[in-house]
Amino acid sequence: MVIATRNRCPELIRTLRHLHGLTPAPPVVVVDNGSTDGTVQAVLEQFTGVVLLALQRNHGAPARNVGVLAARTPYVAFSDDDSWWAPGALHRATTVLDSHPRLGLVAARTLVGPSDRPDPINQLMAISPLPRFPGAPGPSVLGFLACSAVLRRQAFCEVGGFSRVLFFVGEERLLCYDLAAAGWERAYLDDVVAHHHPSAHRPDPQRRRVAELRNALLTAVLRRPRRVAVAAATALARDSVCDTTARSALREAVARLPAALRRRVVLPAAVEEQVRMLEAGAR
Image 1 (cartoon, rainbow, N blue to C red):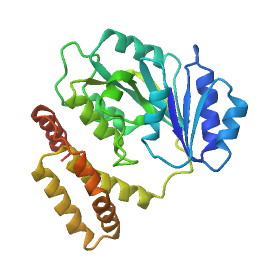
Image 2: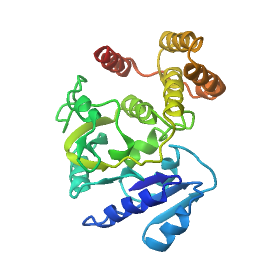
Image 3: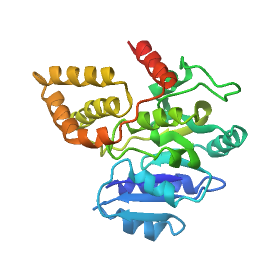
Image 4: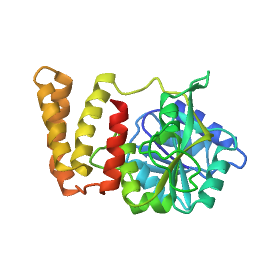
């Protein structure tokens, strides 16, 4: 179990208590992204069995990579500091992974808040139009929520984990693309359940939107054919003329463009076809 956190001490403590109550309790690695709210001290005092890795600055989503490298289990479940796993969920996921050696990712059903409201992504993954591998345990996916996923450690490490170029927001999609390109299966399992109680301490919505637009363009540069990347850049540049959010996203994407170009590896044709299939469905 790997959890990356930053300045959400009360939420993290709640999550660790939920995980500690599971039978059996999973081994947990907490990666702290330079918190200044006493998170490190609180974990050390209250959870002696937790492996705590305290980073000096905020690494964003790639902090999870540090946790995976420290893990010693063949499978790694992710939680956010405001999410945890239902009883039996991790056992079910590991059983399926044991039975499917080429399965790299299990995407779980996510229930939100005290009312256990289904996250809308559940339905999208359940009706995925992507072709299934023979004998696959569930619908094939090209995206997931990092707060409710279990990955094969070998697959995660093979593709390099979460991208440092993206930092945060949309990092799951790029990782899923890379798993698919490397030949790893990805499946949604409705009977593997995670609970997500969103923290009140969340990024400003406009700031998150900037990151979404920035990373959509960077993902196109990193993995999509040139014409797709050029079209994405052109559209964002056009929108930036009248939209300050798009302007900020374009400026940030340009700053990260050299790093993205150095890491550019176009998806195999079969994976690109599946990406287009999902895009056509979304339209």
